[in-house]
Structures are given as C-alpha cells and as structure tokens.
Length: 221
Image 1 (tube, helix red, strand yellow):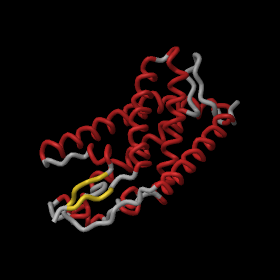
Image 2 (spheres, helix red, strand yellow):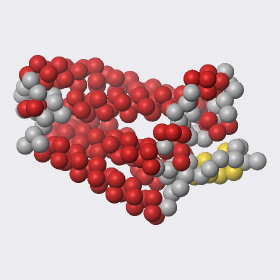
Image 3 (cartoon, rainbow, N blue to C red):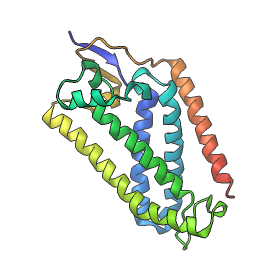
C-alpha cells in the first residue's frame, strides 16, 4: 500500500537549492574573471558555509538527511545493482546516489578550500594565502583553476545525468521530492522530522557556520 512520507526536511531542501545556485554562480564568475571575481569569492564563501552546515545537519538533521541513513555496506550496494535492493533503499539517497552525494561534498569542499589559498597573481587572492608558502599557493591555485574546476563540472553533469536517467528509464522523479519534501513510497518507513523547532535549530546551525566562515576569512585581513 502506497503512503506519503516527508523525506527531505525544509533545511535540507533549502541547502540543496542554495548550493545549486551558488555553484552555478561560482562557475560563471570564475570563467568570466575580472570584475566578477568579488562575486566569485562571495559565492565561494556561501558554498563553504553551506557545506559546513550540511556536515552538521548530516549528524542531527531529518531522518533521511542523516549520513547514517545512506552509508551503505558493500553487500547492500551489490544487491541494489542486481535489482535486489530493499524498498527503503530508494526512499532517500539510494546506494548509487549516496556515492554522488559524498563525492560532491568532498570535491566541493576541496575546491572552496583550495580557493582560500589561491592567487591569480593579477588582482584576486584568497584570504589565507599569507599563511602558506608561495609553492603551496602555486600548487593549490593550479589545482583550483584546472583539476578542481573540471572535477566540479564533471560531477555536476553526472548528477544531472543521473536525474534524467531515473526520470526517463525508471520513471522516478528525483526533483519533485527535493522541491516539496514528500514522496509516495510502497514501504513502511519513518518520516523525517520537519517542525518549527527543527527548522529553528537548522537556522542556528547555519548562522554558526556563517560566523565560522566569516572568522576564517577575516584571519587573512
């Protein structure tokens, strides 16, 4: 019997779409350069704030947003690939989607972190460049502008490709639940807690993460 459950709480949904907008801004401003660089840095600080928030929310957030819900054993992944997955494996992040999520978080965190230490030797320099040697700055700048940017773009394209694949081949709309929060499932599973109280906690966590990023940036001032 099908039932509707809250899968993605509001803080997780806001995080997701804010991250999408910030990453798009990062890619565009990074390619434009010049006068767009101040916005590139601002977008980078937003991404770092969001990532820190997600790391915390992955521990205390809604049921399906917690990392514990989508850290799968190798045997579970194998069964899923064979079409023998459990019904609950497809409620939140499925075993394949989990790889995408963790990969995206890691690559984005590395990208924005390297940006804090990068210097284009023209007009834009990360706020923490003075804390490391010139060689380290050069290496991180090279990674940030070449490999890191490529990794981000590839992961984003793979993410979009996966969404299209599930919609076309499996008839599963992965976007709608991330917009409205709810999903109709055939399994008896818990709903994510999404109350005024949990949203208030999320706001406090977000403000704390923003404060931490602001402090980090000011260290280079």
